Image 1 (cartoon, rainbow, N blue to C red):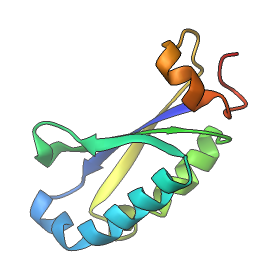
Image 2 (image 1 turned 90 degrees about the vertical axis):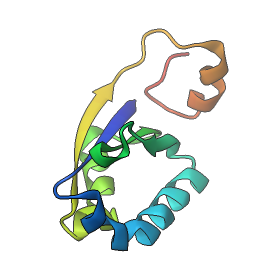
Image 3 (image 1 turned 180 degrees about the horizontal axis):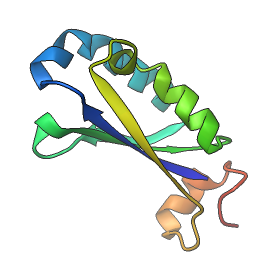
Length: 105
């Protein structure tokens, strides 16, 4: 399965600023583990960001993962999760999804 994790600030970007180092460490940890395939700020940046997550995660596990984000723990952001069962995948992404049990063959 793939999960689109849409981060939205619950206040201002300035209120989230003190928690950026912890959030970056959270991102780096999950990128290193291979769970996060992509992460980035939305444009304009004050809206929040998006993470594309994959792996052996169901929606409940993806929710638990987002609850560990320092932004969420501090109450300065929340996530909306959209779970996707990929039907068609670009060949460049197939290798990334090969370890995903729910991904296409």
